Image (cartoon, rainbow, N blue to C red; front, side, top):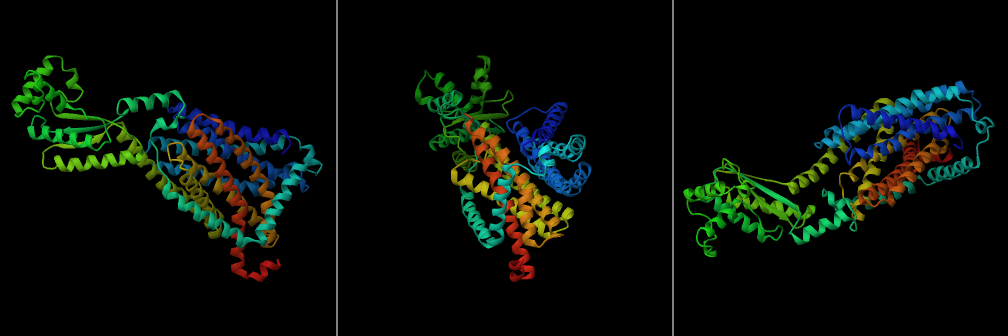
Amino acid sequence: FRNLRGVILPFITVLISVVWTLGLMGMLGKQLSPLNAVMPVLLVSLGSAYGIYMIARYNDELLEGADREKAVSQTLKSVGISVFLAGTTTIAGFASNVSSSITLMKDFGLFTAYGVLVALLISLTFIPALLLLLPVPKKVAAKGGNGQDRTLAKVLGRIAHLVVAKKRSVLVTMAVILVIAVLGIPQLSTDSNFFNFFADDTAPKIAYEMVKDKFSGSESVEIVITGDLLDPDVLHAMENLQTDLEQTGLVGRPQSIVNILQRVNMALNDGDPDFEVLPTTRQLAAQYLLLMEMSGGEMMEQFLTLDYGQARIQALVKDSSNEATTRLFSEIDMLFAKYFAHLDVEVAQTGIVALLDALASMIIEGQISSLFMALLTVFVIVLLLLRSWEGSLFSTVIVSSTILINFGVMGWLGIPLDIVTVLISSIGVGVGVDYSIHIYTRYQEERQKHDPAQSVTNAIIHTGKAIVTNAGSVIAGFLILLLSSFPPFRYFGSLVTMTMFVASASALIVLPALILLRWEKKVGKGVVEQS
């Protein structure tokens, strides 16, 4: 914009949005987490766009000869509708995270939706009010613009010419990119181990690796047995499970009340290793446990409840990757069926590794359900407000393409889906539908005066300025994260950069090509080429 208001007004929108959102979180007693700590950054990328669109259209109206009051009025009538529509769909997209079974994801979705709502209201009320009070910018009043504006307009004009002349080539190229991306999605992995968030040369990661190497692991898997634990059959089943589990090579030596009873039996038989076995009767097992209680029982309390109703088997996991833990839990399930199916006891897996594995599964399941709901919501809202099947379908296609490319690149580059990178799809939905709606509504507006080719060209040139400004500023900000020593932040910065680029390029190139091809199918190729 080359003037102070072009920076200050969008900044005010973002500032108020972030302050109000964090203030509401504080009032409700919510704490910052690694997940919602990223929320202010999202509000910067999404909230600033609304103010940028308003100011860009306001300047266009002034350049066409409108006075200040008329320019504000025309801005609200034209771009105000698309801003409202984009904001509404973005809010719905983030609110769809309420379907997630992860509480942090629910809170993230709801509070981000609230922040976007605040940014939307500020952009549609506060910014127009300030524009009415502030004088007309001198450069705009001179009906000139600056060299940078003219250069950007020329670039966008060339893009528009390419789209009009080579629409089929554009769509074929996009289809090829999508196919390549989709082939990478099966290679996408999940990672719920928070220690992998640290770089290999950081102190926490070095200490973690040392403990894992020297002590057969740092995270544990826990097995809880509920039932008659004095029954010799139950104790022997626990012993067999521990032996077989250790032989898998996935864990260190498991420990439980079984090991304590074996050592007590050996101690009471002059330390003879041949007697390091379980007691043969219920009465003998009860006597050994009573002896342990009388001697303090601290060790026994780690593995057995006071009423002897629940016991715990603990084993340190050697490899806590998702692939290894998935295999481990499968082995444990088979051992449950092998040794406990005929016994009147209940067995269950738990522990930090099991919780992290469950978290990884919930991330995937929550992501699928949230994305499906978000895309469906976007489609319905755009359909109801634009009253256009075409606009609704095309907007959903652009959003879906952005998300698929994001996941495909993650798969090809080996970037795992974790509690931080899972947010990228939300950004893809937000900016993808935002850019698409602005291009399509401007196209609809231009169609009242021009043919399809000229309408697409005008939409790309005029709306493209705001899209490039927003995407460029957000990309520049997120590129700083590439300097972070925290790997998830580096991934996040690079993926947001890619997502913003793909979303803006798709809206400026692919969406107009879809519009023109659709129009060509309606009226015939010759008519479109002539226009």
